[in-house]
Each structure stands twice: as C-alpha cells, then as structure tokens.
Amino acid sequence: MVCNLLQGKKGIIFGALNEKSIAWKVAEKAFEQGAEFVLSNAPAALRFGEINSLAKACNSRVIAADATNVGDLENVFSGAIETFGGKIDFVLHSIGMSPNVRKGVPYDDINYDYYHKTLDISALSFHKMLQIARKMDAINDWGSVVALTYVAAQRTLYGYNDMADAKAMIESIARSFGYIYGRDKKIRINTISQSPTMTTAGSGVKGFESLLDFTQRMSPLGNATAVECADYCITLFSDLTRKVTMQNLFHDGGFSSMGMSAEAMHQYDKSFKPCD
Image 1: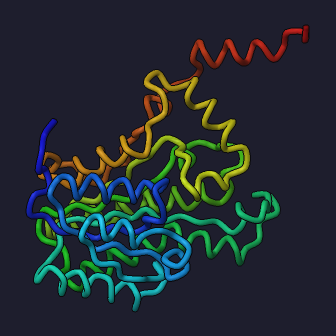
Image 2 (image 1 turned 90 degrees about the vertical axis):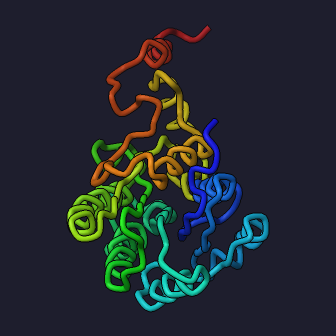
C-alpha cells in the first residue's frame, strides 16, 4: 500500500457526524496518509454527533458552520488558513439532507419550502463553498475539491425523492466551477457517485435496506463501502490525479453500467414461483 499520499497537505472536511459517515472515514484515511485538516459540521450536528472524538484522534480543529450560511463558511475557510498559516490543498463536501425524505412527503406532492431547503443544504452549499474559496484565494494551485453524489442524479430510484434533484445540481456545479477554477488556478473539482451506503443520512431513505440488497446483487464487484469511498477520495486529494477534473466518477462496484445481473434476475424470478 502506498503511504503518505497526503504528506504536507492541508484541508477541510465537511460533514463528519459519526463513525457511519463517509466524511468520518475520509478524515481517518487522510490523517493516516499524513494530512492535516479542519473538521466542520452544523452546530446541531456537533451537539448530537461524535465529531470531537474524531478531532482528538486526528489532532484536528473543529469549526461549526451552517453550510447554507455564507458568513459561517467564510469563518471556516479563514479559520483553516489561520490554523495552518496559509492556504489549503483539499476540501470534501459530504453534506446532504432532505426534509421531504425525512417526513415521507412523496415527490409528486412535494413541499416546496422543504424542497428549497433540500437544494440549499445539499447542493447550493457546494457552490457557496467554491465561490468563497475562490474569492478568498483559499486553495493552493493544483488543489482538489470533492463532493459526494449518487446515481439517482441520472436515474430514477424509488424513494430518493428531491435528493435526486440536489445530486444532479451538485454534479452540474462541479462541472461549471471546475472549468472556471481549473482555468484560473489549476484547481480540480470532481464528484464521486458512491454506492448506497448505510450512513445516518442514507438510512433515512425509504426502502434503503432493500436498495442495498438490490445494488449488491446488481454490482459485479458489490457495493462500495464507506471505507473504500474514503480510499478513493484520498487518491483525488493526492497529486496522482492532477489532471482529473469536472468528472462525475462512479464508485459503485459497476452498478451504474449494469442493466440486469444473473443474481438479481434469479431473485426476481423467485417472486413469480408459488409459495411452498
């Protein structure tokens, strides 16, 4: 295994809540690979999560921020620059929440106030981070920004609701800002389309356990775990991927390229057989 891929690099990791979080696993892996970073999440998440124990383990500073609030985000970036005595090298956006999903509101009867909150928290927050970072010149040339997304941005998956719209938006933001930031500062911006993962947020999606089973049967390599996603993030933060930008990178065991697998077909056929 390659070691110290991120030696000397500084960053910000948004979204670590507890040990189930992909952002939590990314923080652990980044620390193992020699990085220093600031951790950030919403004040409510800091109260109910376990981020302080992660910060202690990784020798990291925690800065609370509502990701929809420009002033809070400015404070995170300026705090990181102050902490490290200069610019940072990577940012992870691992933030997503839908009040419509949490409250079981169906997509065809969507609550628009909730919808606006979904888009603001889950997608527009990414644009705000990038805009603030660029205005503050907070990221070193050839730095890397990664956001987590899901294949529901391209395909309809039952129960994913307005989060699918948010994921489509975040992927578009990565392309649009990727061109501007890449042209001006050689900073690369990508999204990782991860397998469904049993995080605290993911488990709130209706029928999530059935979805996990389905994608496991459909994917030739099986579902990608949170730890495996963290490994992938580390490669994108590293100098090994300096010419990868504006991409939506599927990290899903091959699910996104499948139509029907033998295992999934076998399970489907069983539903037509008479019960014993």
